[in-house]
Image 1 (tube, rainbow, N blue to C red):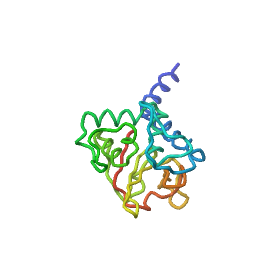
Image 2: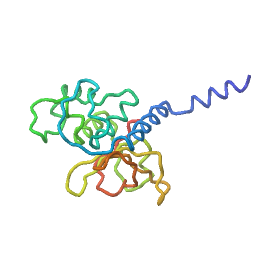
Image 3: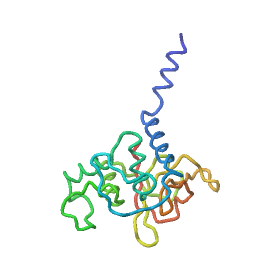
Image 4: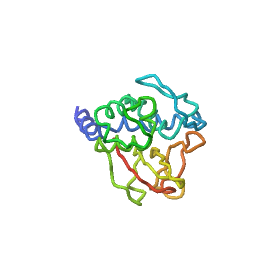
Length: 190
């Protein structure tokens, strides 16, 4: 009989977000070997819940699909937030109003969205500060933004550094690239 209260205390000590974070990471991992190409073309999508074909996409699609795994539709969430607060988002594409087909698929918009949710955490050069499930944005050498998810798979070179799940041009991959580019955003949703 004493075991039941101890079990309850052990379960209560677990972070409430552990299961969604694990599902989120699982949703990113599930794209590896399935999303095999990179295609940045503008696509008209159904709303809500629209997605480009799973075989292709861009870096943001990895994040979008991982969130869908836990029941969060970034297409809808970003679009609704942009409708309410359009001036709070970057205006890099000469848009006069939100566009539910593309807004959630743009790194600067996702960065603004996560920041508006209060999900920003400090950018550091300490690998231990980047935990599984974190979202990281970079500026790649040609100046374009990039985004990915910190996996739960540790680097072979440095055990406290986790690999990144992202699509930087060859489909969804899990690679040890956390500090390869300049980090411009770090977000912890869970």
